[in-house]
Image (cartoon, rainbow, N blue to C red):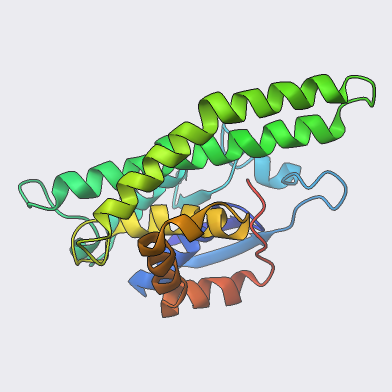
Length: 223
């Protein structure tokens, strides 16, 4: 049986959501962050070579990386509808948005957060310089890429309910979580009404609500 090793306030909530959507039995172990550093405990870091969330185990298998885990779980499930097969007209859209979530949108968000943290924690005398670097990187690199993704998604959602047509797929789980974080951090969704409505639909799904209830502590910190 698949067991999710769930780190509080992390991308692991995405895997918990997927497992709730599928509805099959699964194991669940909760790990709290260190209250001082807000990092994962050593017991969690030792689970996988990367030491990051999420992580699952299945017998002798240990697997990390969100999209790898999503693929593995869907492979084992009775829900082929969560991933359009090769030859399906929706396959290309599915692949694009599934990988855009972790390949572009999530890294840009995390990079922006880390830059802000670097400014906040810099020594007082150099903080203005670090802050200037932060703002320059955000304006020249991070924000344009975020805007490009959000504009493309706004267009996509103007003609379909989900990212791969009118079918809910694992791409919506991968991207739905990431957009939830955009919303929580107050970024720009007012400019994108189709995305805003899409996020609201994702948050209303019973499986997402069940995942939040099982986690009990989710506030949206990056893993």
